[in-house]
Image 1 (tube, rainbow, N blue to C red):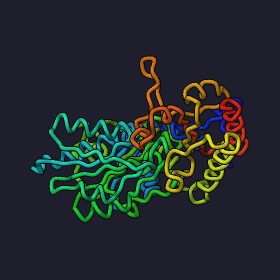
Image 2 (tube, rainbow, N blue to C red):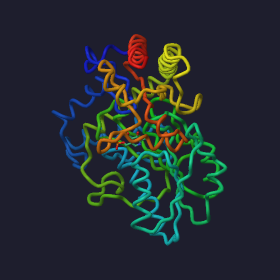
Image 3 (cartoon, rainbow, N blue to C red):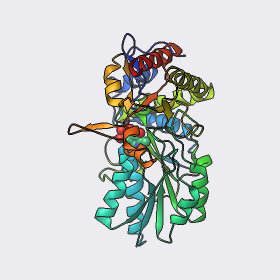
Length: 388
Ligand SMILES: Cc1ncc(COP(=O)(O)O)c(C=O)c1O
């Protein structure tokens, strides 16, 4: 267990690690010189530039190593949303440039809005046909259904590794076996799984993979896209030839250094079995909630194929937004959102077949690096008291 995080001491129990994570103090320390003395532009050939370009190369290696990405390159972006857009728009526009028309893309309904928006953009602006596959009651795509959806025009499939709301893991390796057979590229948004479970681009069989800093203890505003060798992309932003011509703009060296440091820490945490500690905390809260509210707690998401840190449950008869507003000593998230005075159920839970009334009672408790057994017990006790 890490020493207490200065951002969490004396404040509500933080159970929203899928929303964002506290920056690891070791990441801040690694970044500090690049916010002060090491200010060089990595494209400059003098000593100041060389210092920055060495740091950039080290960070790229650290991120690449976390995803075992030797057979490809890591492109730094400003966000996961940008990495998703670069993968999806970039790969499809490259196919169109190569005179592959008509063009077809396959994705699924519980993807993050960044993926869905990139698909909608292609539909609306480039007349690309997109198939949105449904999911089962656990939020999983059926690989056979995906195989049946592929046509001779399909150029890209985009399927997330783990869902942000439920933690459900998609059968990505099985899907990759199908896309490979059909010569179709596979993009995987691994924003939520990186650092929580092993993510190996070769074991998963993906061509493009989204990595997000603020979900793994780096700052917000830095992310990366892994691009397998030989995959053509049209850049979203042109200009200088940074990032192998795939993303123009002078590199954000301090934040990239932070992402590299966070990747190294994530690899170390995984190898010392941190996932098992998270499972124990997650399951403890689940068991305590079930014991304190008998028959009223229902798991949303896959019971086994799920992120080690994520517990999404509906509690009968208790609207989530009201419950979390009353739980002042707890920071967690509801799938539902309040729009124009009305509570809207989560589209992810709705796609899994939950009636609106049940989806509106769903809360997401996501644990992480600084969650203690005491935090888990306090959170469960507070929720039981409020829901009784
Ligand atoms: C699955 C998934 N993809 C993409 C993103 C977007 O990342 P960013 O906030 O860096 O744009 C998120 C963030 O919530 C996410 O959970």
